[in-house]
Length: 225
Image (tube, rainbow, N blue to C red; front, side, top):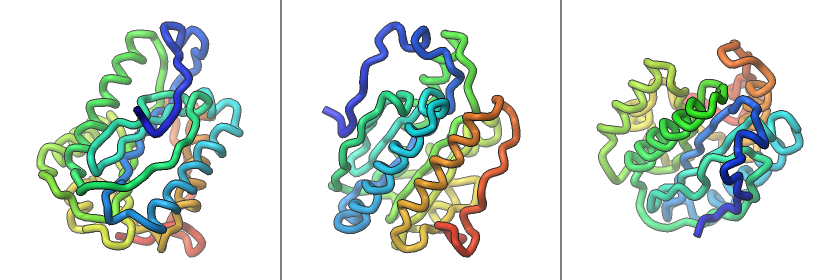
């Protein structure tokens, strides 16, 4: 049983919605250290994100979301457009198998892109968005290689966000882009930025350069990690 409800597309998924897709995978740390206010704020931000994207009628049909939690690693939400997803709260447990979670995200994305190609559906460069407050309890060697290969081949863009307590040296080794540090528990602001960014991308044509708001402005949600 997953934490999210999904309306089944069945075999008519792309016939019912032939729009090009803007895929995003969230890799969310739900290990024990995220209990209390961190997971509460993460849940509030994630709920708002889904609601905000759904308000944009075009983005709701183009932005596809998958969610992987780790602690333990679980694909709790397979890829689906935002208009097909209903939020349910996340809970915390376990350790921090970040490497396993990133590897699962890369595999899940590759499988989804194969489905797009098989059905002649266009798609934007996917985003993989990692949020963690800790240090990985498993090896990151394979995950690091996969991230670097994916960035180099432009198969996806990988973003790492650390909450207070995160191992930023580890995140810098994992991510090609410099990791960002969340200001306090500004999950609402982070997800507002993410929803606005994905909506902007979904309004463009695949391959277009889209200018995104800088999250590290004085009023932004992040600082350098």
